Length: 286
Image (cartoon, rainbow, N blue to C red; front, top):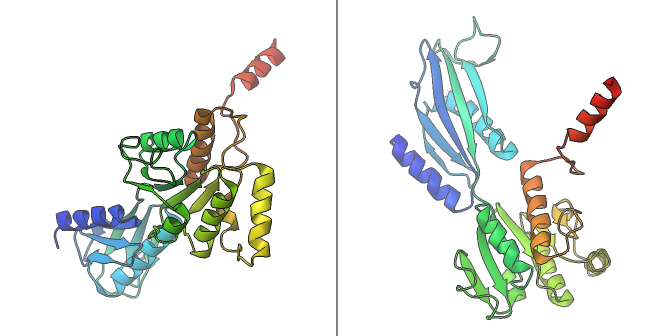
């Protein structure tokens, strides 16, 4: 299979919402299975395309690619295909080819897909900002005056109807993010319950007051919903505490928190501003 075929398959997997590891031989010293440039693909769906030599060596590389997929981080790994004279930075193997091969494992993440339950006053700026950030957006609302292609021309899909029922029919992807912003407490609760009981794989943001959030969580527990596998992916109330007031400011707080979670930033989030520290240092020297 050609490199172009492998890259095309990578795009297909990403469009399906799967994370992809692209493994490329970047250096070879002495004898080895494939020359630099040889490539294989491993998708989080389990799909493998291409080869860098097969056999036990490729098995070791696929194991490393699997770790990279799980962690979402690229890496370079050097393998010694000989039992002796092993470089200190190389992984020792039982192979007898005689050379040293270095591979680069690059991890490609699909663009997040926002499942927006609620297309009202807050939902609109949430969707607009998510689209601006390059996320795919699915918009759902009970009201067709709010959820329609004219209002959301960029949306991958717009649904008007029973959003609770629709939440139970959607095919979830590992890169999905759910934002519950319909605004009617019973509907919001039922959407949340549906997502959790169906094993929604991504993070869930629910736009609600602290009191309403506590009420929903207590109700889920009373109704026997197992939260153990989802609680770390629940964000209730949604958004960073930036004293947001307008719908647009609320959208900024929610999308900022989403970016923070996806990028693995530290919580609580701190300002990067150094001007006050700089000024204090200047005053201390004067």
